[in-house]
Every structure is written in C-alpha cells, then in structure tokens.
Amino acid sequence: MEGSCKGILAAVAVLAGLAASASSYQIIEGPKNATALVGEEARFNCTVSPGWKLIMWALNGTVVLSITPTEPIITNNRFTSESYEDDGNFISEMIIHDVRFSDAGHIKCSLQNSDHDGSAFLSVQVVGKLFIPSDSLEVTEDKPCNVTCQAAGWTPPPDLSWKIGAPVSHSSYFSIPEPSDPQSTVSILSMTPRGNGTLTCVASMKGVLVQKSLTVNLTVVPPASGSRPGTSLPTWAIVLLAVSLSLLLILIIVLLIIFCCCCVSRREEKESSYHDEVRKSANAGTNKEAFETKLRNGFENYGYVSDEPRTTEIGSPPPRSYEAPVPEQHGTSQPRQGPRDGQPGPASQPQLPLHTVGPRKVKNETLV
Image (tube, rainbow, N blue to C red; front, side, top):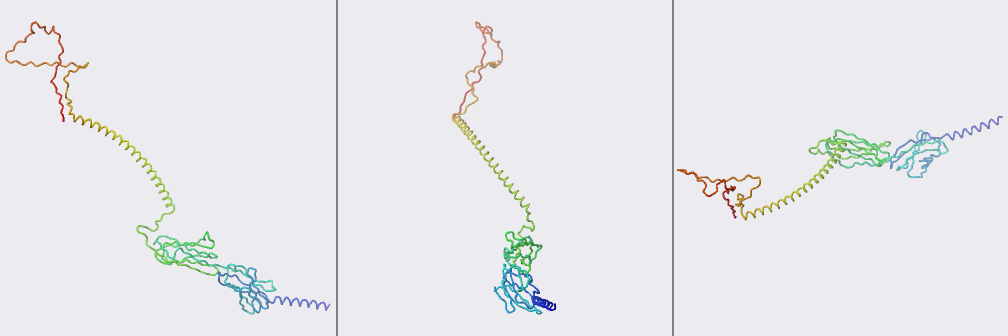
C-alpha cells in the first residue's frame, strides 16, 4: 500500500511540474486595432510573460514575422520588429513599412505550444486629391453664387468643410457622394459675396486625423449698371416665359401667312383693275381720236334745222297758222274790199291748211 501511494504521489508531482512549466509564459496583452495611411507605417505590440520560446506574427492568416529570444526571423523586409521589457515582461513590436491598401485585415500574435493568441484589425486609408474648378474665382457683388469642391480618390470618403476668408452676407454648404465615383465626394458652397478674399476647401479623415486643404482666390466685381441683385427669375417663370415666346412665335408665323395671302389677293385685284383701266384708256383714246377728227373737220352747229318740210307725226298738234300783221293805216280808212267778181268766195273754195314757214335757218360750219 505504501509503495502504491508513493507512485501516485510521484505521478501527480510530475504532472504538476509539467503544468507549471507550460503555464510559465503566456500573452499578457495582445495588439490593438490601428489605422494607417497608404505609404506610411503601422505598429502593433504584443506583451508576453517570461519563459517564451517563439513569438509569431501573422497578417490575414499568413506568418510574416517570427521572434526568438536571440534574434528575429525576417522573411519580408516590409515587416520588422522592435523589443522592449516592462516589469520583467517581454514586449514584441511588429512594424509594417510602406503600408499598402492590401495590408488591411487581421493581425495576430501567437506563442509556440500555446492555444492563446492576441488579434487586432488594421484599417488602411487612402488620401486622394481636391479639385476646385478654377484657381481664381470671379463673382458678382451681392449676387448669390455656388462654388464646388471635389474630393477624388479618397478611402474612405473624407468630410469636407469650408473656410471663408472673404466678407459674405450669407453662406452654407453641404456634401454629397459623386454618383459616378463612390470614392469621391462633392461639397457645394452657397454664398452671397460682398468683397474680395479667399476660399479654402478642407478635407478631414477619421482615424488618422489627416487634413488636406485647397485655397482659391475670390474676386468680387460690382454688378452691371441697371441690374439688381436677387432679381433672377425662378425656374417656373423661365419655363412660362419660354412657352409664351413659343406661342408668340407661332402666332407671328400665322399672321405672316395671312398677310402674304392678302398681299397676293390684292395684287391680283390690282392687276385686274389695271387691265380694266387699260381697256378704258384704249376706248377713251379711240373716242378722243374720233373727237379730234371732228374738230379737224369743223364744229357742228346743233341749232341748225333743215329747210325741208318734215312730215307731221300722228297725234302731234297741227302747226299754228302764221298771220301776217296788218299794217295800221293812218288817215281815212277804206272799207275792206270784198271778193273779186268772178272768183269763188271763201265759202265755195276749199280751205287748205297753211304751213307757216318760220325764219330760215342757216347751217354754219366753222373750219379750223
């Protein structure tokens, strides 16, 4: 019994020694998350207790650096190490030189023959460029205007802000992502300038506290004569004005067509009137020639009456008899003589109507 008890105690002592030797070194503090810019350095620390034999550093599951108590085992020149001691503990620092965007990912520090490890995450940021349309801006005094600033090639997109070094009556800005480029951001500054100065666009990145800025000169010119600030038409007014001008143009075209049709009709009427006048002139010329012929032959006396007796028309009153006046005799009056003897008296003779012949008219013609 005593021998068996001694064997058990010896086995327990061996196991306890092995456990004590295995637990004599461990990771006290692992690495912490870090953010680095492309092209710069990234550093990670791992603190272990004394007694360690091998420290291994891995990036995204691949061992990139190994540390032994005597010297580091370097397999890539971009990954180096520094060593420190703190209260008897060993501190291993891994340095990543010339950080690349592909280096972003998990960082792990582990010990040989140990299930415990420490891990962290590396974030890699990219600083891009800033663009403003012009190095010198010229705007109108007291007239609202917009200035844009674009941050291109940044990862992640930065926060954009403005520093205004000129007198303004109003200013505000907002930022929106560029639709065609998710890594670009556009900031729009709205302001009403009142004097010359400078405008500065500032891009800030989180994590590494990086700022990048771009400054442009601002030149303010007085408004043109007769123009007033703030009189720009709204969009709906511009649309209404465009529609009105279109309708006015159509109306003018219609009126021009009507006017042309009226001109053509009047021209036809004038041509018809002209032909009538030509005919009338021709007739008038013919009449004038006939009249001139008569003038050359002589003037006609329209008061001339022919001496030949005219036949009395039926129903016309008979012409009155002409009685010759009896001369008045002075002195003794002689009795009226009766009819001569042997001559039939008035009762026995038939009475014929007497045609009185008036004064003879002479037809005169004057020859020219």
